[in-house]
Image 1 (tube, rainbow over the protein chains, first blue to last red):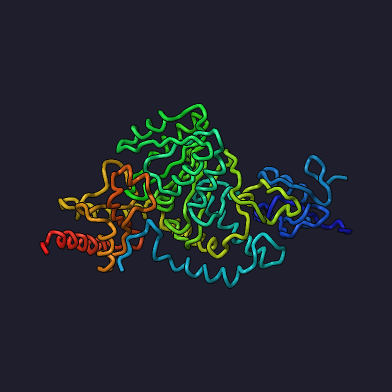
Image 2 (cartoon, each protein chain N blue to C red; image 1 turned 60 degrees about the horizontal axis):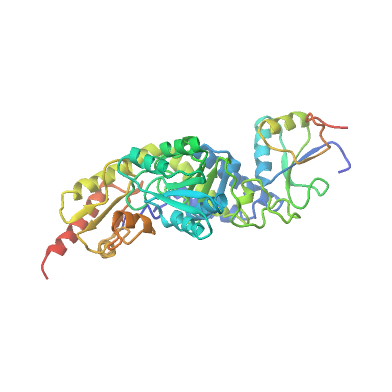
Amino acid sequence: MKSRNYYIFALASVTYAIKAQSLLKSQGISCAVIRTPKELGKGCGYSIKFFSDAERAAKLLKENNIEIKASYPKLSAEGGEGS
Amino acid sequence: MIYLDNSATTYPKPQSVINALSYAVRELGANPGRSGHSMSVKAAKAVFEVREKAAAFFDAKPENVIFTSNCTHSLNTAIKGILKKGDHVITSSLEHNSVARPIFALQSEGVEVSVAPVYESDEQTKEAFERLIKKNTKAIVCTHASNVTGKLLPISSIARICREHGIAFIVDAAQTAGVIDVKLTDGVNVICTAGHKGLFGPMGTGLLITDGKFPIKPLTEGGTGNASLELSQPSELPEALESGTVNTPGIYALGKGLDFVSSLGTEKIYKHESKLCNILVSELEAIPEITLLRGEGSYAPIVSLNVNGVHSSEVAQYLSQKGVASRGGFHCAALTHGYLKTSDVGAVRLSPGVFTTERQIFTAAQMIKKFVKSQNTPL
């Protein structure tokens, strides 16, 4: 995770990862379901990885009650990219 | 064979369901929700799509659709996961053992149990439930339709009582899902059903659909594919209640069964099967030796009967020899047969399905008449 040209949202489970993927896809944000990298979660878990629209994606997930457990890069409280 | 045992499991299954089983074994062969490689994610997506279909069918959220191995598994999960020592639970006199046994098992662990009688009048039934509510009543658990007689319970009015008293309402929809609509929006908190009956999935599939208002403690803990380094069970649904690898081929095929039901529509299915039941009733009701276990009110498409004190297994055996598959015996329903006073002979249950024809029904009625005649012939 040296480069910053992608985003990862760690989610509660594979169900939420696929739900998030399907939701974002319907809104024009394509993403992949991946295993959560060790930096973002304890043990196994699922995340979505994508390359743009992080703020909009975070907002969409929040509106649909899909909790982002951790993210890369770290999100600010407003859901946008933090410092 | 004329198959009139659809209440036990629907047969035959649609071709799309049969094909789906084979497809899933070939193409969705990786463990869904355990790995990150493409076939695992493909399998997980296929499972999620069935959650979405079931969610649309029962007015639920997809993550609140739990896959189980059958309706009994769903009911045990809901009943034992919601009730605890000191709680009071009300059930009905028409329950299958899948409701009655877990409830009475909890009775020995300090859960108080009451059984509400089901009357011909829905109003009287509703009042019977309401009268039994106490301060510590935690849940009402009842069937949507008796698996012995098909008698429908007034679930909308029972749901209203539950809402007014803040009680959990758990419904056993084994005999109705796919035939008669039952949804969370009817006020039910937890719907438990089989996947292999009216929803046309394969055996080994079941569903627990929750609105999430009453947390359900898992019946089994174990691998969920998430938070693996924590020793406590994760709380997020559906994984919290789905420890262990799920039945991907069964679930995928169940999705095709749901498509089949949705394409026909439950109303059309109910109309067809009820018409067949009405034919059976009109063919048999005038025969003095036959007692039909039917009364006033609404019924799921089941016709149960007895022949003048003859044990039901004997009648079912005769019908089987004549090519008619029915179900004799006691239908895993101790409470019901006790209530109906049929604990001596049981009942012969005939349950047509979506593929049953009128001609088959007339033939089955003929066979029953023949049996009656054979009983009247002196040796």
